[in-house]
Structures are given as C-alpha cells and as structure tokens.
Length: 146
Image (cartoon, rainbow, N blue to C red; front, top):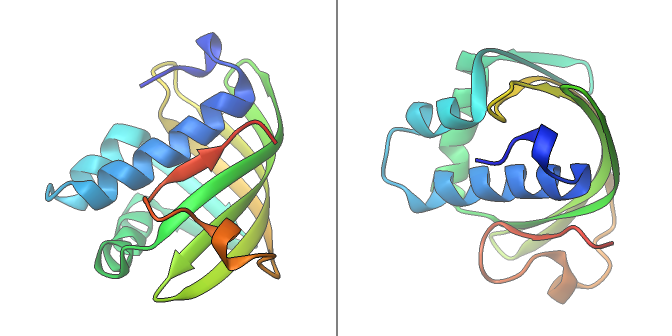
C-alpha cells in the first residue's frame, strides 16, 4: 500500500478507496482481515454526523460483499499536510441496475503505513448524469484526473 508521504494526495485517496473496494469484493477472506489492512485498529469515521468505530464499519462491509456494487471515485481535488488529507470527490455507484452519485467532502488522518485512522465526511446524493458514466462494469474503478 502506498503512503500519503510519497504520493500525490489526489492519487492517494483514489487508490486507497479503489484498492480497498476491489480487495473486499475479490477476496473470500474474512472482511475484518481486509478491513484491517486498510484501517488502523482505533479507526473512527463520522459520516453526516453518524459515528462508526471498527466493529460498525466492518459490519457495514458485509452487505457490500452481498450486493457487489461497482463504483468509481472521481477525485476533484485533494490536499495533504503531514498525516492529514482533505479531499472533495464524487462516488459513482452502480448496484442492482441502479445508478447513484454521492458528492463527498472528506477530512481524514492516515497512519505512516497508509492506513486510515480517522475520517469525517459530509455527503449529498446528486443525480447520476449518464448511467454509462455512473460506474464502469469492473468494480472499483477511479478517475483521479478530474
């Protein structure tokens, strides 16, 4: 896994989400083991005011494995300072023939080895412009060039 210190912040955040999603869906390994490769043991994520710790986040991954959505993270901008990163991106998701686009303002901290330690996100759902652009057929695609 790349570290934040040696990667462009836009590329780092795009690669982080793509790799985690792909590994989660392509592996038969216990989701907790996959999760722990990408997240620090003391991970805390607050999304739209809802706080989730490691156990809640792992529970959140289980339905993703069942529905196997494809997604693409389009990173619009990202900046980093030390172990912190701020990013604005759109998550394009295709699940069960439905398309969804979610705009995300992300503020996070990462460990020296590239695992997420803390995340604060504000999200809003926006209309998915063109279903063919919502998510590629292969899961976990990303566009860090936008």
